[in-house]
Length: 172
Ligand code: IMP
Image (cartoon, rainbow, N blue to C red; front, side, top):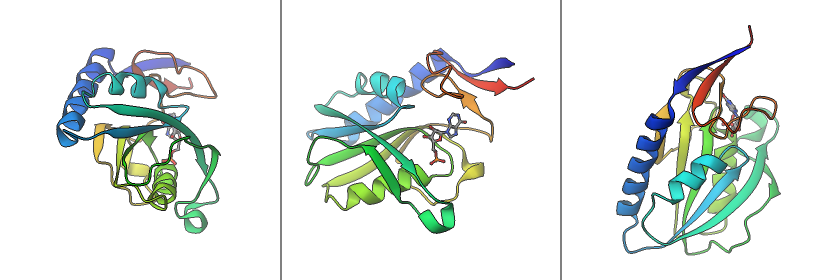
């Protein structure tokens, strides 16, 4: 097995800074509840919130989509929920990757029912080739090819999350 560097540590840092600046500008004068979807988001989330210059509340959740796209259409099983009431508040959901889009659309459906003031999505990566559910990504760091990627929070069978860059996993 080998790992090819796909997105370098420097390129990630540059993009995360840009996203933080954009988010700070868009929510100027407001507060934001930033909700990370575990486990893959943890490094991105940690770097992103340090680039956001408005007051943030940090929350995490764990969710997985169930069924196939025809039956689940955006339903998620929430294994760990946030602790704060988001009614009337600005919420930004942070994902590691939007692949089929089922997880994020399920989380957004669930959160919409809690009546936030606003709800937006920020994702580190987006793989348009595999999208099954139409999702709006308001802040995106990188659109990528249909490859299995690891590092910077993303795993293969639980490993490689600690890599500081995003790599492509080759079985060979
Ligand atoms: P979804 O298919 O958009 O619901 O994505 C579900 C989850 O699958 C993501 O949050 C990731 O944790 C995981 N995932 C999807 N593609 C990859 C990948 O290329 N590498 C590592 N994890 C992935």
